Image (cartoon, rainbow, N blue to C red):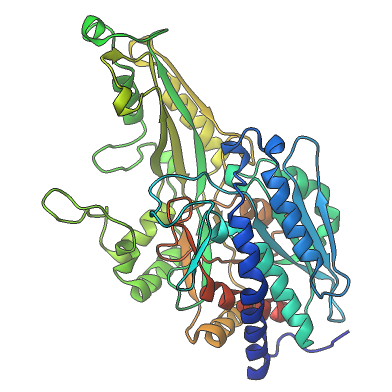
Length: 491
C-alpha cells in the first residue's frame, strides 16, 4: 500500500502525467466508446414504455460493463445489479491503494437518454454521432454517457502513476431521465457494500464555461406530470357548439392562472418559494463577475418581427443566475388533444392535456409540492369540468427534492482549486444548476458527513435534452484529470 500523505499537493510532474493519461484514454478509447453509445436509442423508461423488450438500455449497460472490465485496475469488481421489474444498474468497486482509513469515494453517472426532440441541424441527428472540431454531437454523450468512462479513467490514471487513493465504488443507473424511480431500491440493496462514503463525485452536471473547473453548489427539485381538462366525450362541430360548450383550452388556462402569473412567470403559491441562503447569493455575485452577460446570451434566442432579439426575464447576471437556480418555474413541455396544424378542422375538441415541468428551489420538499400542486389544480374546476393532474412517479413518490451542497471541507476546497489551476490554468468556479439530480438529496440524507463534488461537461450551448447536443471533448479530458486529483486528495 502506498503511504503518501493525501494532504500534500501533487507534484507538477504528477498532475501532468494524469492529464496525459486522460488525453490518451479519451482519444483512443473514450471517444470511440461514446460514439457507439450515442448511436443506440437507449431512451429512459418514461419515454420508452417497452424499454425491456427493445433491449437498448440493456445493450448500453452491457457495453459499458464490458469496457469497465477491461481496465487495468487491480482488484476491480463489477456487477450488473438487477431487481425484478426495474432498469439495470452497474455497480463497481475498487480496493484502496492507500494504507489506513476505511472511507469510500462514490462515483455516479447514468446511461439512459432523453427523447430525440426536433430541430437538429441537417448534418446531425440524435442517434447519428458526429465528431467535429472537438465536439462529439448526439443524444446522451454529454448527459451523461461519458460519466462511467471518465470515472474509471480517473481511477486508472492514478493507479498507473502509482498515486495513492482511497477505496472507490461506482453507481451507474439507467433511469435518471425518468426521475430515478428505481434508484432508491438499488441504494437500499447496495448500502452495505457502499461503505462509509466520505466523497461523492457526481458527473451529471454542468459548467459555466469551458475555461475552468466548475463545482455545482445547488440543484433544483422537480414535479412533473400531466394536467388534463375534459369537457366532452367526443369532438363536435365548433360552429355548432362554441359559445355554449366551454373550451377545454380556456379552462386549462384558467387553472394554470392559479399557479402562475402569466405576465411575469412568477409562481403564486408561497410554499413553492424559499429564502435563498446568503452564501449562495454571494457565490452568484462572484460567478456573475466571471461570466458576465454570457449567463443569458448563451441561449439560442429567436428574433422578433422587427429583428430585435428576444429578451430574457433579466439581463442582470447575478439576478439571472439566481432566477435559473433558486426560483420555482413552470414549463409546458408537451401537449395532447391538439391535432397537427395540417389536420386541424373546425372541431371543438373534447379535451386538452399539457405536460407540466415544475422546477422547485433546492430547499422545497418535492413530495409536498406535488401534493399541493394536485389540490391547487384540481379543486373547484371551472364549469365543473373534469380536471386531473397526475404526477410522474419520481424517487420519493411524486416529486424530486432539490439539493443544496454542504459547506466545503478545507481539503476539498484546496483540491478543487489546485485541480482547476493544474488542468485549466484558472481557479475553480462555483455555480448553481437549474436541473435536477434526484440522487444527490438521497445521498446527502444517507451520508450527511460526505463531501460532494458535483460537476459535468454541460457547458454553454451543449444543449442537453434539446437538438444538437454535444460533448466538449477537451473539457471532458480536463475534467477527468481533475477528478483524479480530487480523489487522490480525499483524506
